[in-house]
Amino acid sequence: MGTFGLRPRLAGIALLLLLTRCGGTTDPDVPEFRIVNVGAQKITVVNISLCSDSQWGANRAGGGLNPGQRRDYQLTQGCYDFRAGRPDADSVKTAERRGVLIAVGMTFLWEIGL
Image (cartoon, rainbow, N blue to C red; front, side, top):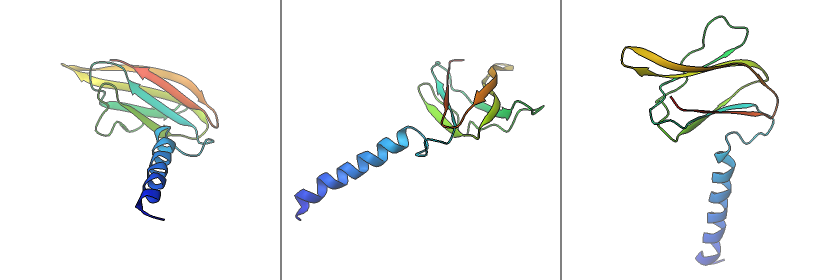
């Protein structure tokens, strides 16, 4: 096999790897939460907690989500509360989704603009 036969195969493998990661996890049974920033401002706070928790979990925004960006979080089956926000002058502007039931194989999509 010459270099001409190897290149298309490598390109095909790279494309396959890219496509399998674009949807988050490669395991279709792992539930996910996907947040997409459809607003014009950066989201700097993402909290995920179980419905039974009395407090929000740690901030999972990492470096934040710029407009147009998305982030996937792997979860387990259960009931979840979600909060996203950003600092705004002297307060924090937030939005919440509470009591979301996440099932096996499900991806919960939250498109948010703050």
